[in-house]
Image (cartoon, rainbow, N blue to C red; front, side, top):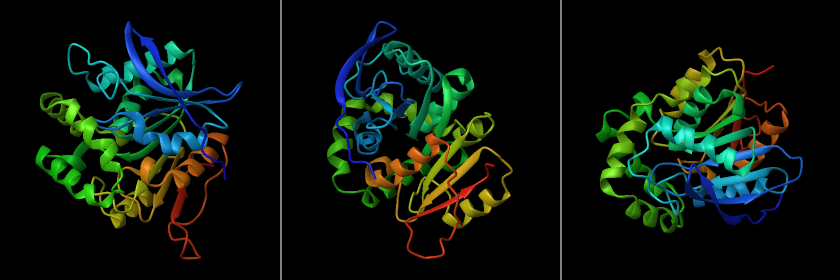
Length: 276
């Protein structure tokens, strides 16, 4: 298992706007781009990203208007955030990347896959949010409230300052856009290798039994789903080693195969693969 590797804080000019990001380049290595969630910076993605940075060129940006990156003159739509992610790759000189999204980052990833398929090697959706499961808006807000005590207490020190600075109006507009975008459905329609990492305790997802039922019924050959038994929503922060191990094997092209119920009864991760 790899040790964590420090990422360097940097600024890059993306379409004339400075964007803060954390980065480490590895010569001749595949690129992994980590996209953060709703109203928060990329800082909580670092625990997982740093475990991959010894082997892969790694970027963890604050998308425009998030974290340290300056706010644009309007609230960016989901497609505009996806275009910003592609423009960020241009800025750092990366032609293609495996894109890892969490929560809203999965929604941005889905739009990225639709709008810039030639820039996407593989897709990793960690705790996808939005779509019918988060409608109406009040239901989505209640899901977030339920998730808070299920995350590590230290997550609050990362998230709360970002939420406060993001602003009420911006939060509302983007939240509505996220809940109306069927990210998972959009991405499985893109013919790219896809890994979905889900937490059994995530209130933004259907119950575990329903997830298993849907997975068994799906006929998507390029999809692999990993279920973390004790994880909630912010898996990149709460379960970095399990997440990094899954991503590492996936990017290498290694088969991630097991049953939905591991035979030893102790494994924290269950994997089902629809790939060859």
